[in-house]
Length: 365
Ligand code: GN1
Ligand code: MG
Image (cartoon, rainbow, N blue to C red):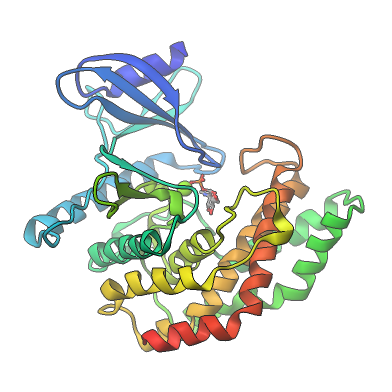
């Protein structure tokens, strides 16, 4: 706690720190909500970056600053439509003007402003919420569509490059003591049968069909902030994985997260399913804004992207389970195995609804 107060003190915009609580349920970084006794802003977000994952954490804060400055300028030039607000968390600076602070034990801290009068949810509540999440992703992509992707650093090499996750998986499987539980066997078999999918987006990129753009990297449902009063989406937070990539990673990630009504932490993995009505609402919300910058080729790969990113996340969780939980934070030893089963069941469900999902996409082209 003492460390936390010291770190919070470095970034506090004004006032006195009166409370610090763990916040959200991120799988990688440690996040805290700091409360201030102050006339101005009452809260801010303090984070300890997991430097085992983000090996060059100053690139992460650098990208956040580039992005928020770009979006702020864009919004000044063309404000959002009436009845809406759109916010980008501000990077807070230390008294020396630094966007991060490293404590005596080597922990890397940074802070961002808190988005007030808004909340996020771990699952999509209804069609309207789904459509707002889609709107948020469209808004985000639209606002950064003119930000040259070479102005952003690659903060996490290999992120969402499925063939790299597969290579790593093969190395781990070759070394791991696998045991023989039915769940582990199901996962091994699952990957064996579907590993041929892994290259689809990277091949399309290499062939020039899909191009790199700035992306969010992690637009899951609980990263979309909803205005408490209006129910409208007003921000996408968690900008750590903003970097050049394919918008397909984002669309796939958003849909795999939003169209799973049981949520990614459910224990009832056998009954996980992909809800196509939600998929339709989210894509509709997204495409109302994204239509202007998506190409015909982009549409051609949407279905594959949805299926692939669910599979990829399952593969990442399963690999981490086999490796001894070195990447994602876990509450128990089998946690990553349980998460992998959820994503694999979701992938199965996406496969069994392929015709419906493709029809939804075709209908919106
Ligand atoms: C991780 O840490 P968090 O919860 O924001 C992960 C995402 C996964 C997500 C699954 C850097 O995000 O890729 O989709 O867990 N982030 C990183 O919940 O690996
Ligand atoms: Mg994240």
